[in-house]
Amino acid sequence: GTSATVNANVRIWPNKEVEPGAVVRESIIWAGSWKRGLFTSYGLTGLTNVEFTPEFAARLGAAIGALNAKGAEIAISRDNTRSARMISRAMISGMISSGANVTDLSAMPAPVARYWARHNRISSLHVQTSPVDPRSADIRIFDQQGLDLDKRSERKLESLFFREDIRRVSHYEMGRIVRREDQTDGYVAEMLSRIDLEAVRPAAFKVVIDYSNGAAGQLLPRVLQEMNCDVIPLNASLAEIVAEEADEAFRQHLQEIGVIVSAVGAKLGVFIDRPGERCFLIDEAGNVMSHDEAFAVLAQLALAGRSGILFGPATTSLAFSMIAEELGSRFVPTKITPGAVLRAAMHAETVMASDGGGGYCWPDFAVSFDAIFTTVRVLELLATTRTSLATLRSRIPVVSHEAAVEFCPWDVKGRVMRAMMERHLRDRVDLTDGVKVFFDGGWVLVVPDADKPEYHVIASTLDPVRSRALVDEYSRLVRSVVSEMAPQAEAVVET
Image (cartoon, rainbow, N blue to C red; front, side):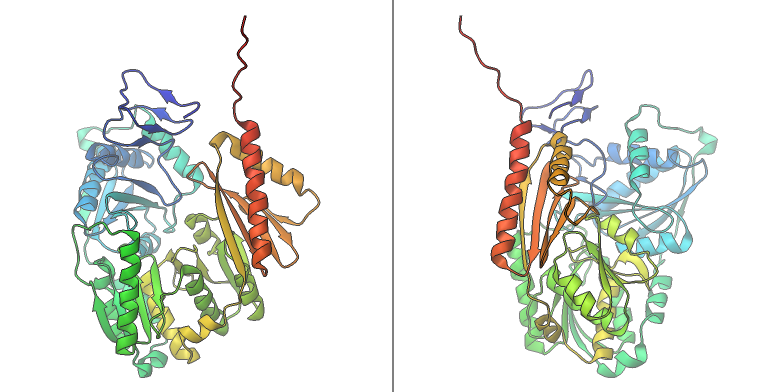
């Protein structure tokens, strides 16, 4: 990419991609690309044993340890997969080499790791096999509030990681490792204290839950038993190795869960991803709801009993403002990254929040995306409101939500933003993330992707024709700016 730097004695095999502005410090042999930085919108993500090697993990652990004072305590947890176990143990060795004391929490779901960090006021790490691609792993870093690191801390860690002088302590200053297992009891106890058990027990709901072989299957059954639910579990055993699954096969799997829900007469079907953070909801008729539909249904359930603020990314459709307004509340957009949604959800008036991708946050319990608590809260709300998911789904306002993605080099992204602002100097705009321009009956949003050289163009109106026209119009705007900024070939002068 443009403005990339390759250090001395570094080898790059053919057909490798180097992002613009990246500094290549190591040879690229097995990995397919070299990124500009460590972090994405979802933490650190890389191919296991290709990008995330034991050497990489140990160095990252040392950098995290060096980010803190000698003797500082850092906790680490993981899922049950072999790859997460390998990476977490390499990170532990790196952390103690820089003088940090490590609390090894072993295997637990990601929401429980966030809960533990906030409850104990200790910075924590969580390693998991990616729920999107089992060939990859995710490394999540939480602060003492259980939130993702802010951008300033991310940049500081990246600077420390890429430097050649990460702190290494003397043998007598090495950190200690304390192993603490079974740290989930407090999480389960507080969850039960937040639920109206007297209301939900008489309902005796029948529920179908697919745990996708994750750690949620070790916790949620205990809570559902206390709620007097009849549970039909699927894929509840823990798996150390996760098989790849094509998108079409996954969609078919969700449809099969819907068939089971309908056949057994269940009130609810839930697919929980392996980390326990995100889920798909299935109504009593066996219909698999999209993430937007599920968010809209949950918003109606949550706001029916309590008015307040509903948070979601700026890309969330016009329907949510309409739902919130009808129920005496308001929808407030946030930046589109999951971490930004969680930080916004700390507002005292927040009723619930969602990242728009199946992650739901209930701040009265915990500021985290938690599919385990979402399942429990949905059952509670269904019992107290005496309604059904299918009924609420039918009440979702009908809007037209269109989107497109346009390529845009990193160094041109700022020019696109300026072009948008210059075009709408006198119009009503929202700059929460990108530029959102409001029109009668809807809006259009032009927002840069945080991780890719792309722009997203999204329109949400009451008219499908207008939505499509707005997306086409502003997609052309992005393409025209990119075309103007593209380097021009020099003319050849024959003599």
